Length: 228
Image (cartoon, rainbow, N blue to C red; front, side, top):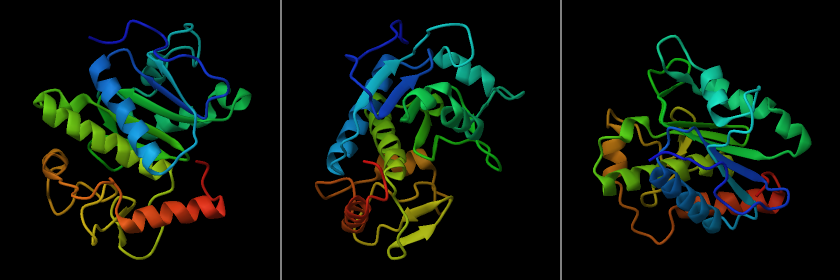
């Protein structure tokens, strides 16, 4: 079942984080991702005010519906250009009226320059995530994969990873996980398929983030380098 309503949370005044989805996203998948965003936000003690818009559809004009964003970034092979999609959220008129971060979920297959496909991407405080390649997963496996992927991309929005220690460049900067499994590790490494790696990832400690990632978050907050 995909969304049939425009807004799925009580409106709040001047939210910092807009969460929305294209009309093909299953309501259950959307809820899993919402819960993961709340959990990682609580872990980093974020004060961002979240507003869920669901599959909004205000008009047929530019930026008037969630599906407009998708079709505006559709490629000839049917995939959706994630880089262009992120760019639309940076440039949308809503940013002028009320600056904010965006999280956008779609069931369309995303791609990025020089890649065949991506599960998600983040840039300049915005994040896009696709559920497209998880359709055939068993429900518990799908839930875990969606939780970890969405929280991982939120970690990038919160400024991870920029430090030198216990980190490396792997399709962007990521945690090495030298002090135990960490949410901010690059999941697609050493030829390991991302879905398998996420399904098998066991984070033994109470938090999703390792000590080094928690320390880096604290430093960003102290220096006011990232808006939380």
